[in-house]
Image 1 (cartoon, rainbow over the protein chains, first blue to last red):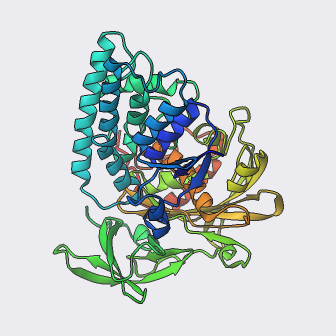
Image 2 (image 1 turned 90 degrees about the vertical axis):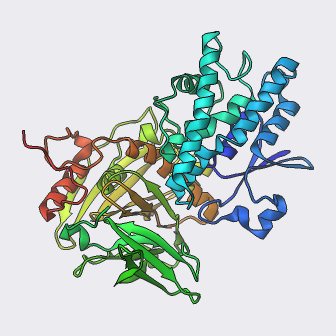
Image 3 (image 1 turned 180 degrees about the vertical axis):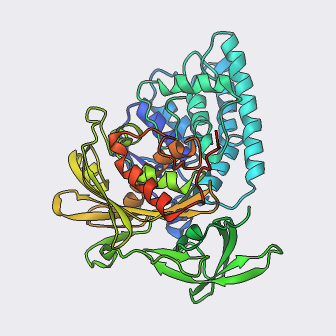
Length: 209
Length: 294
């Protein structure tokens, strides 16, 4: 199989990649990584695969990519014939990139809170939750503005890789003690996202909210 | 947070770390029953456990024992014996230390969720249950007085992908279960091995109540599976447990009521009813909803 994903089921970052692989209906091989408790991603063997010691990693033939956002961009660029997931129009491309980076940076505070609460990682949980709330406020305000002009998705008239990148840690934030009560526009957007053809949930996604 | 004064809760052996969790030469701070504790492991791997005093220094030393890939300690002087689970000593079994998961829930709600078959089809859809076959067949519960444990037997459920090996082979099956509540904070089940009706997998859940509403759950297993990798086995178990976690964290009231009329059970809940009656009989107060007088 040409596509291989180094995967941990409960990782929201791996989930980003699995979502797009499913939406594009691509066959791929999953290589399970014992992220917890084994910390396999920090072993010397895995550091050969990704010197940053992070998952996911995607292999596409001879190419090896790390970083969920980079992998999303690569898959959309290579395998999406509609061009919807990664629009090239100048008015859309920049905003998609901007929200993609937001997903890889600010929203990751929600991932930290989840690692603390679920897997017992030692970190500043109050700071993680506060930063996640600040990021969600920005996303919810943006989605409110989009809703006011009748739009569902973060950038385009179609869902893009920006929506995919922002979805997992937003939807899983309850695992880290961060509720969705204050973010009505985000809740509507998550509900629309869950209805996309090919969508698969992962443990911890609220399915009835 | 202050330590409970409930002697029933205090006199239990309680899971406090999984084997391999504390790096030799380091220590790990956690809590049980409202008491802060520290587990310290020397470079040779021997570990000790202390209460942490109000000044942050080490207080009373606590006993520490290792069983089922877990370290246990107790705050009580006459703790209830740890259970006997012979499957962990059988040579052909694989013992999976599935580490631990934290959750904000009552320890008893976690036990009840483990006992419950009715949620399989909804919470573990397409894995432990199917929307087409939601019936919980009649099963038996008993209080085994010789060991003072609650058992549920003759449990059967149709499962599309009951375990890692079943999931890989794509075969649904009727899985037979036996449940065993071994202490107020520990429960296990025996379930049909995929493709082998003679023997059962042993899957345990040991709960460390840090407080009445905050727990760490440990999930060691002794199973018969020569196909799956340990990574796959652990991944499966964690996936299931995190599906339960979101449900457990949203249960209200958080504490468990023991008044029979507080929550309306169905026939599928007879194991929960037996569990609650048992908790009431032993006089458990920790983690129990104190009913307000009308």
